Length: 311
Image 1 (tube, rainbow, N blue to C red):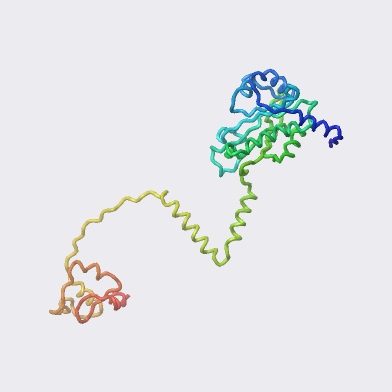
Image 2: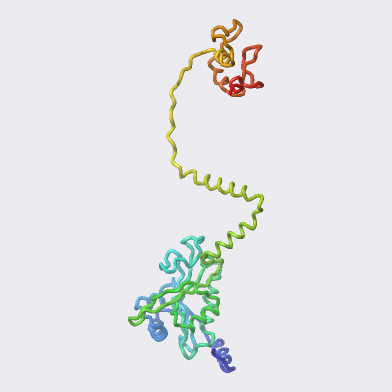
């Protein structure tokens, strides 16, 4: 564990007082290239240095002390859809692909000026920039780091970054594969993807709001809503045109009375005063709640149908 003396804190105060932060420009290309070559084991192409010193889509901030760059941070704001395959699950699936994230490409400080708060000042300035209303759609800031770089890992963990994923053989350094980690800091309401424990907590919270006596009703309601919302998935059945059946105009009263237990033939049951039911009322006679009124020979709905009594 590193111990710091009073001179270290005095030196940090002096650096903070004299330190200036400014954005990189094209004239800084050669100096930035020398610094990155000394700091990082990864070799970057010349086009990368040209982009971070000239392209406005990069947040390239330099810490200057006595007209000398002693530290810098380079970050890029991009949509979630433009993330690499290993980083697409940085955010929860509830956020659309148009949600923005910030990727820190590099953060370094000259060796003799380390542990004086320069890296923290650069990172804090970036996070302050991302916390403005213009950047409210940025929901996460993430980076990659060598698994063996314990100094950088402790630095990011002190600034509330959390380890997201282990990346085996992620780096290729001088012909050798090196493992890495991805670290992420959620900002502006961003959330990580749900784990199995998160789903269980949500399920338990849902069950705690349901009373035992209303559980069958809740299950039935959710089942009904589930199938109702998916009714559009079912194929539509073709309509069937039934033929127009012209039924003969028969005396249905005679048939009913004939089935009610009379031994006489149907022709002898018919009375001269009995009316023939029109064809428009045949459908009404088929209703189980209709019967024959003895006085008028008409169908009423306050008595039991003779056919239903036999059944």
